[in-house]
Image 1 (cartoon, helix red, strand yellow):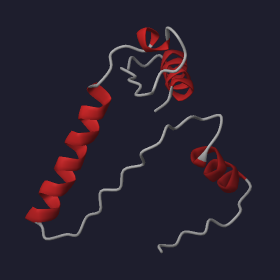
Image 2 (image 1 turned 135 degrees about the horizontal axis):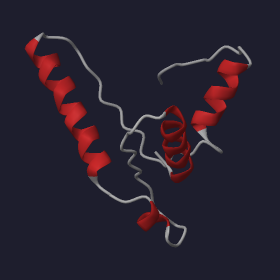
Image 3 (image 1 turned 90 degrees about the vertical axis):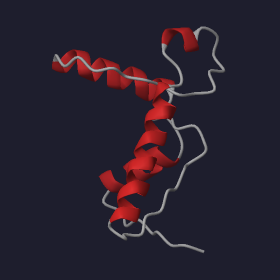
Length: 99
């Protein structure tokens, strides 16, 4: 989750009166942003933990699983997530295929 999405999630939680811990992982190219969004590293560890849970139950119940990591920054103001959201809102079909 990038800085913009982190800030939106934090504000949403505050407005809803829900106390949640929002954690960001980013390259932090903007000065001071890393300090503003502390702590670092815990989100990545939680993702790894989630993957291990999926792998454990996949093996236990003989169910195939695919761990697919998106190794790029996500931000709500540009990129793949924005384009997918626009397509959904505009009710355009999404074409998914493997090559």
